[in-house]
Length: 59
Image (tube, rainbow, N blue to C red):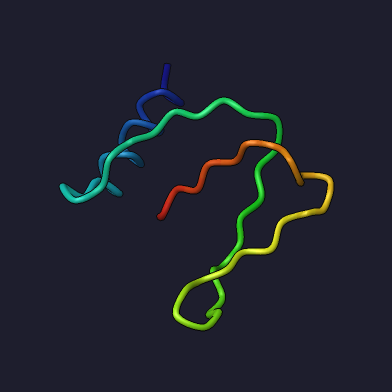
């Protein structure tokens, strides 16, 4: 139970009224930094991911 309290405290410490919480289920996670690409941004993903559905969350 102490670990649950620590988790809750950590979440509350990081709380910002401009952020929301997402709960996502998936198979794999990659954390990347968006790079400039012309008038847009780009993130490269593994070629094995081609044709799969992905979701991007801005942190």
